[in-house]
Image (cartoon, rainbow, N blue to C red; front, side, top):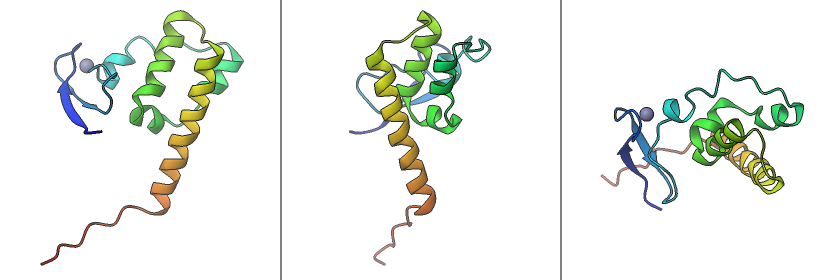
Length: 109
Ligand SMILES: [Zn+2]
């Protein structure tokens, strides 16, 4: 999958890195606008969404699920399951990256 940048369709200012064809060009600030200030009261979801902020930054999918919850007040079991799975995978990826930062490629010259 080729990553490319597109201007945010909401604020028309920020550039969004598009990683999947299903992803809408909406920047982090616009996607989360009006979301962060609403506290989550349901303990189940509070725990579910209590993941590193970096994961939300990296994953459009995680942001999207959280935004859906904020909009509809609940999620299907399937969505919860997938959220957990993706959050775990992303967190493992981050850990791996922290332990073995990618080495800069040596130039052949
Ligand atoms: Zn925006």
